[in-house]
Length: 323
Image (cartoon, rainbow, N blue to C red; front, top):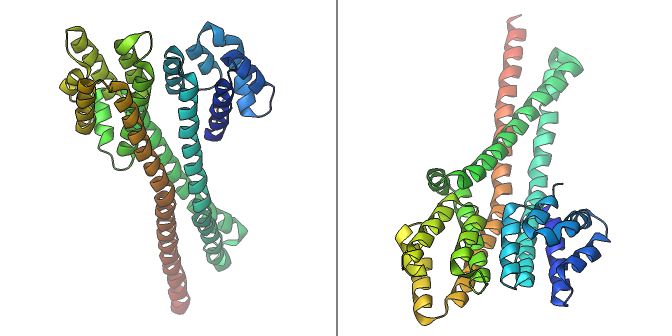
């Protein structure tokens, strides 16, 4: 089952509310399962399996491995409610950004279809009839939809490459807009899971491994694994992370100061918030600028089609004069 951002927002928000009231997770999921909609369907899939393993149960409900990793960290650290609240806030911003982008894209899409209809009328009048009208409109719209499909496929490829290998991760990070967005999202998840797990019974090493997995970034995952080996050899957390060269300098500096002052958990949580805010700003920017870029692209396509049409009409007119 595919869950929308809004479905996940409702699921995690409602779960956090009930956990805050002292209701155990299994019972909270039972209450959610009594409702309607996709969130309720997800709860019905998760509830029977939750006592056998939260990660497997979440996967059964249609949630991603990243969602499950954050929740497992929250559960093992006794901060499951906080993990649910963070996920609810994250998906609320994603849902808001998508709604804004779709609303803003309505006008350029209208222009695209109107242009396809109006610019297909003259060729039909010039001698092609209704068949020519549908062929011209279909060709124009087909090319536009094909370009949109190619762009969507490229986004999916970049997302998968980001998690597939360190070299691919580094290459994707250089891609304008997409690279910065994926990097910021990965650092948000890394810091969030690490902050949730530092006080857990598993300790720093297990939390660091889970944070690397939850980041969704091959480079951060590899950096976390290298840092774990360095810590086992006697190094400190901040020193080991800095030695990998896979983390931002400002985060390394902040962790160094926090480890020295004994405020590591607080500082990691603060940086999770910093990266989250940066991520939300990027989401807002994408929701604002992508529709504008779409509008300019649509206008360019329509103008190009107009020039082609004028050229065709001029050719027909020239032939008529020669005749």
